[in-house]
Image 1 (cartoon, rainbow, N blue to C red):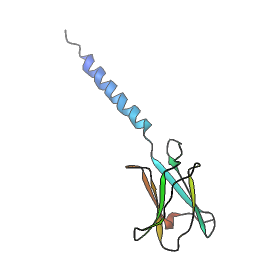
Image 2: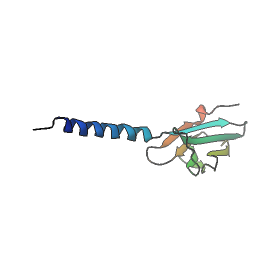
Image 3: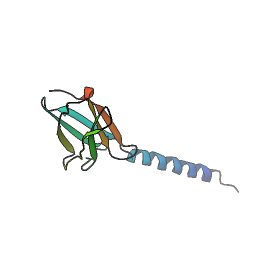
Image 4: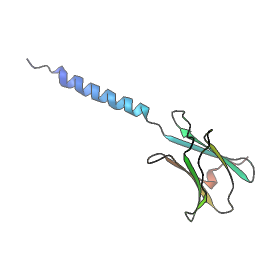
Length: 109
């Protein structure tokens, strides 16, 4: 006698495993705000609520030169002096975990 439920059971287990793996995924998040006319504070982390201490956060000019090389501190933040040239911020936690913030998108006080 053939058990028709066995293949269905295996398929169901495979689908459940795929859904649980997707719930473990986390997306990178980064927010930058001007503290005043001279300084900007960026905070990075992940959608699962975890912080990102030590993650690279560089300030890059439109000509692709690194204006301010940096890493997030223990509190997942970095404060830097606003560059005179046009720039964007690159939060880079590895492949698939990158966020770019253009200077035009940085909130001012």
